[in-house]
Length: 307
Ligand code: 3PG
Image (cartoon, rainbow, N blue to C red; front, top):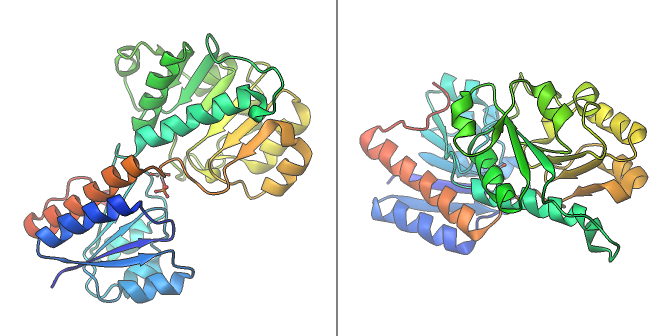
């Protein structure tokens, strides 16, 4: 029987597992659960006998992929697939997919939530400020960026976006101001929210040269990936700009150093939780299960990312 493994060290909400199970079992497949696992070896052991895998930020390394003797497909229930070794998957003829857009509202709500938390001094009782009228720059206008724009407009923010892969009209139709260069986005906006993927072009690209262009006071929000930040230069920005704040859902490797020195201007969630809502889990988890069923039964490769 076709076996579908859900391997998540940060589990989906129970309601999402219920939905995934329904899709898998109605297709005549068997669901295998590996939740809260603690070592990569647990994942390697579990993948050995399955045909398909659903993961979140779990690392689908070459070792994992090679251990899947019957493995045909891996679906990342979410947007970013930087946790899948695509070359290893391709070499082994394993299809890799993501589920674009399914968890984007949850991530966008967290980005705005962190901004309010910061603007109100982390709820410490002291007088803060309002987001209304402030300039927000959205760095990459994909599914999450679009949701951030929609919510920020509800707050009355002045919203700008930069995305080198989209025509101007795609941004302007949402009532968002189009910006032609990344430098212009940073030099215009007091708040910048990151929505870029982590890849060879973007890793460490958010550096001092870009951040130091931001007007005073500046606030960077990262619900994307830790790897896109140049961490040594982020620290330099903190040291040189007392107005600079960094709100992050992805833990920097120099977190302790930043926290000790710049506590009043830094917030980081204890665990990545942008997509950690029942709704996002249901949307992304069930989409992943449906994609697996469609691929195994009909060869449908929509959303394949290792072409
Ligand atoms: C994504 O890429 O979809 C988000 O970063 C969510 O990641 P998660 O599923 O590990 O919470």
